[in-house]
Amino acid sequence: MKKTLLKTLAFFTLPLLIACSDSAVIKKISLSLLLLLSLLVVACTRDVVSPIDDENSKETALFREQCWSLVCGRWSQEDSAALAHIKQQYYFTPDGSFDGHMLIMKKDSVSVDGKKVVTDWENVVDNDVYGRWKLLYDSKLKKRVIHMDYSSYMIFQSYLYFESVNDSVLEVSSPLSVDRIIKMRRNN
Image 1 (cartoon, rainbow, N blue to C red):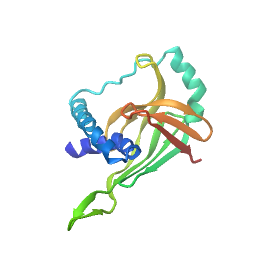
Image 2 (image 1 turned 90 degrees about the vertical axis):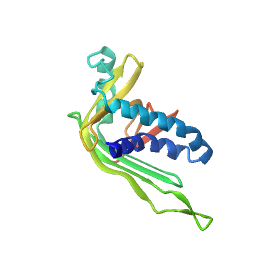
Image 3 (image 1 turned 30 degrees about the horizontal axis):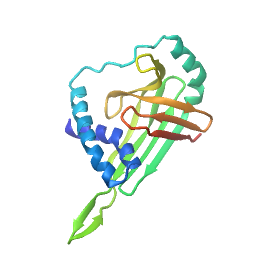
């Protein structure tokens, strides 16, 4: 259970750490990460309930009509910093299923004989993912979201704020990151 929680925390927070590779910024958000881990522990002890209840709303129908066919396809995103690397790939199918792969790696800065040394890459997460996806308008948040119901190595539900999509770029953001747009590139 502890290992799964740590992988889940890494899954959501490492992209934020990559965006904020300045050590002073990382120190400032470490308390936030501890809070996130606490929230994950609480979430894992409760029944999974979808936060979205707007499955049949007019806004959801319009959102799906405008964007469903554009979101369908293969998408990837890769981001690196000195001590972290993330690569994610998703294939959103027209039938509402998805599969893909998530790779999160890190390096540590350690002291050896009084000198700073960077370790080799270590995989934090290296797993195939799959599940169901849908586009929804969440009236509580007043946001369009991509809702993902994972059935792979971690069973959980998540959602990404939908920002925009065109033939080559899908832009989303995570409710757990601070003003960070994730740009995924189409690869089909």
